[in-house]
Image 1 (spheres, rainbow, N blue to C red):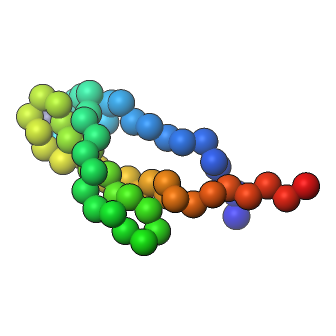
Image 2 (tube, rainbow, N blue to C red; image 1 turned 90 degrees about the vertical axis):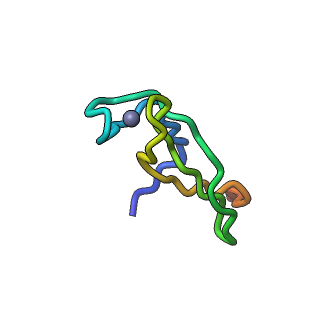
Length: 64
Ligand SMILES: [Zn+2]
């Protein structure tokens, strides 16, 4: 399994209510043992357009 460590930070997402890609606001939704779940809200109408789990506490270990 190929895993990317590059953080994907969406600034625009498709909003079904607006019918187009809109700038989004990130909101902390839940703090889980495996990370923090963020919710993306449309900055125009406030509709939730997606969630994302950020494994913030997880350290990437590089073994040399
Ligand atoms: Zn919207």
